[in-house]
Image (spheres, rainbow, N blue to C red):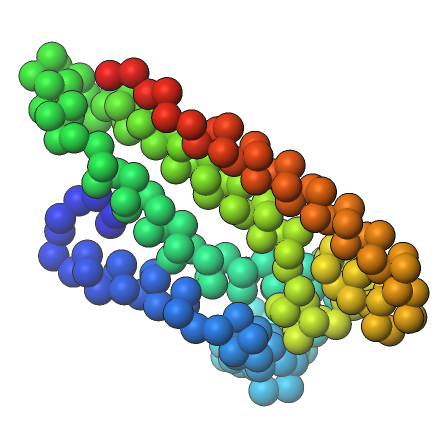
Length: 201
């Protein structure tokens, strides 16, 4: 879907990217209602298919809560990741693939010796941005779980927020913010290192 030109590929690309333009708070509220054990669509579908008898409290269980929020985050960010790889794959000259096919290289050989090596920086960018995003996650957890149940969905920023504005430990909260800033600076430097242009053709 990212590289090949097949009928309908534009529709799927749009469907993948559409969640990106939806605000994170709006997405969180939408999925909060979908996971609702009273009127949520997931429980309704599973009950209609006779897969469950009683509604599942998706956001009330420590394990299912973090997985449920994770599903929402994947839905929200997969479009941006697809865009990164779309740009990266379109930047690979078609001459490389043509030369490889001329030399008898199969699909797997072209994938592992051309596509993956030349997408190394794209993989690094997606990975580092995902890690940074996980450190900065707040809205979805604040709206969907409020750190619960049993404090299993408290993220770094949510911890700083609770420490500073719920328990009014402003000094401790400021210290945590400095630690978080240091981590983000290190990750940014790592990103610049991984994205350096040392490709040899």
